[in-house]
Length: 144
Image 1 (cartoon, rainbow, N blue to C red):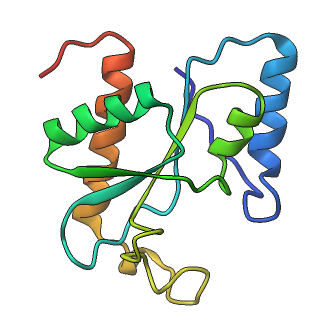
Image 2: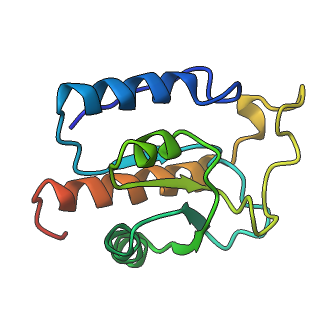
């Protein structure tokens, strides 16, 4: 399990692009890349998340995790964030985000108000629990 933080996503997926290409060139076997981008806003309190461009298997994992943590997930076709760099290199990948496509997304995006105080803490914690659940199952941890 590798936890990697990328920079320069907004200017062309530069950090993730370099990392994924280097992994492919080195023959690294990445089972799946899971990215989290913009998961801190839930105006309607429905605990719904979008899973961006998942494979069928990854989406099934997120559906099981959502049921376990009391959240909802829907699949979207957004490919403009870091998970795309891994897909471009032939790796399975999925991105977790707030309801960007569905419209329940922060009005503070790239604005001066995009600060810690405008993050929905409880929603953000559910996002973390969702990804941790998916990763734990992928690493062989038994269901709770």
